[in-house]
Length: 266
Length: 311
Image 1 (cartoon, rainbow over the protein chains, first blue to last red):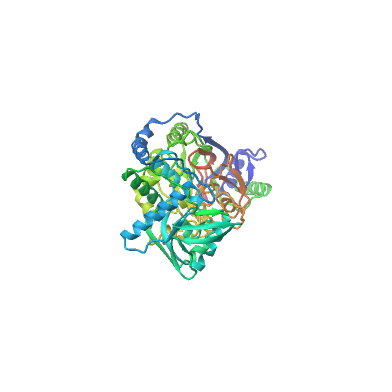
Image 2: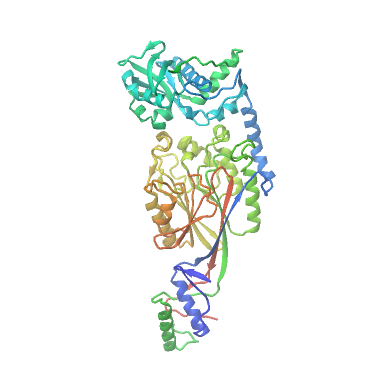
């Protein structure tokens, strides 16, 4: 049986002679303009579960293992040691403080090294911090899990009076990771904003470090697209975390993060 | 039918007239069939494998211990041992998701797909994550073509490095495969896709499928799509739209939305012909399979008015 234009037909047409019926078949086939027609379809999905029926192919392991082993060795590199587990929290959390301080500190260092004006403060989004960091050894693998994306640090120039949408966002989110800036949140509204100890000035232009995802309007921060300038400093957020931890270890120190009330809920 | 020894010409014409009237077909060209049998074509497919080379860690809350390229390869090899006509295809987002991509830029992903014998793939949005340059850099590790019909890479490093479609011939069956990509603006950072020009996927799919069917006489037409299965926003291009607003496509192998479609969805195209839409979730957790049984008419000989011998 074959189908042509959705009309299934059989190859036997008994009312005609053998020869004639063959010709009829030919006429039908010719009407499809193809040499083949779909007769039947069968579908199946195989799932590679924990107890997969299919054995592991050893030949492919020969290809994977050099990468796997190198990666395992790299990922197990201990970058630093933390005296406690770092988790996200609102309005201020240990993980957010570490992340924002690392970005601010590393961005300042990078700007100093490249003769650029350094950022006044930093903000990030909690959504970009994917997993907590453990107490004890923090490995490179932990940092890749914390920050799998290639998000880059950018510096935006924004006037103080134009930062209102940012503070509205911070109020609605009940706090986000920040560094170099302090504020209170009362009834979801931000008040008493101080940048490096000085009250926010409406007419001053601030240099603000963040990730390019937010700067490009991610997480409904489209207002950031109207920043006066948007400058990439050629530094990924992940590399900032990695270098921050490496510097701590190189100085013979342990990572110690303390909540300092930078965002306080009243 | 001049020269046909077995027929009284007049009787034949009369019988044919009766027969064609009887079954509602008239004015068709006269072709001849000498034999007929069925060919089985086995399509295997993945999508959104996202650099998942190892199985998920056992402590993963959702997919603990699942997936893994080594297991996939074992199954593919087993099926290849059982079936004669196998095509292995991928619908994009090969890159991004594990440190394998962060550290090796997709090199191992391409090498493994080559080792597994992938026949073709299309590009997903994450395949632009290291920029066009980052993708081009990995192409030497891929011995299979990337099929992109609605991205124009003119004046980019990818110019001339992809194909709009490819025709595979399995046991004489012509299988036309082409790739359809998602709109990059707003999804992928502009610096990563550069001067790539995106064209409406439905229009391009229709044109490409018609070309493969009519000009290239393909018997089976498969679209590798990274549009996504379907969206609440009914205006957003999807595989559902692709299936219902085109003709000539038999199978859409989708991706992007990471949808686990247990049994391929059936749709009807503009000509009321059935189209299957399949997707295997993501991360190499599954391998999809569609077996087509096609009726072979390999001895069809064009016969317009010439002698036809039927034994």
